[in-house]
Image 1 (tube, rainbow, N blue to C red):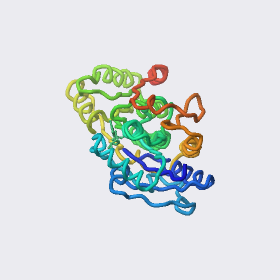
Image 2: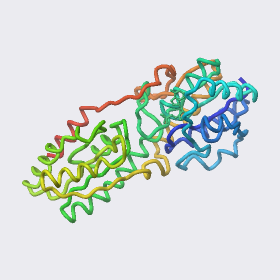
Image 3: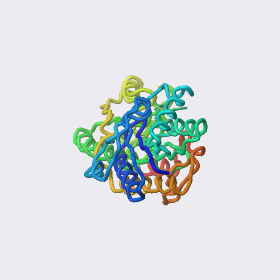
Image 4: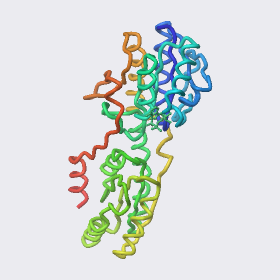
Length: 325
Ligand code: ADP
């Protein structure tokens, strides 16, 4: 193992830079040449790689986003396109690839490994925390913290005006952000991702608001996952008004949840994952993921991390319900 390349793929998440820094410096400490590939698999196909040194990852640890940038590259699902990518890596004498991204990106890495024997390591990076095989993915904590700070501010005005707010958070197919934000902000209700708007239980939400009003609680916060397309909260607003004569305000947090300086947790985990990713390749691992399991950063087989998890942790839902009554 002489040369390793690293790329980010899929959605960006705060903490990716910490992982890149750890990858680069662990390589250099082990006399491995390290190449950064810009814009994910698309950049790989364009041959967009550059050699990195200690200085190229200086002063990035605290910055959100990714210095390597990221992209979606739909054509990477085609075997012939992956063959091109493998050819480019081999031509540049790159012996292994580290992919920082979500389970989609891991599927690309897995196929590349299966078809062309290239050793790959995945580092989980997505604010949704929805990758199978790992308890944690880089960026989740920062995204939750950003959303919490926003909801705290909204609660100030909600309370001052006796208003109900529906705050829409990210998590198209994952309930994790909504659940954690809901619990940490004392939300009165949480709406988890749904396939169709009509699945939202408007009557229960309305009854909860009315019960609060009866006991003199003028304001409520409802946390809504964005659903298939952004804007589910507008539907909830309209239904509450039309069917129950309950007015509310909508606030969609959107992409602010993707940015910002990574929290201590994200830096701590991302740094360990970046370091372990390189160490695992040096130890001869061929297809693994740096996962967090039971509070430890460990290696998991890549094939166990290809799916999306959708866990609504009932014990937390129960706490939210109990405390908001
Ligand atoms: P994430 O990695 O955050 O889950 P995506 O699902 O958008 O994000 O995947 C990112 C990229 O990974 C895609 O644009 C594509 O290049 C690659 N990819 C996703 N799924 C596959 C697949 N089944 N086979 C090969 N490549 C894939």
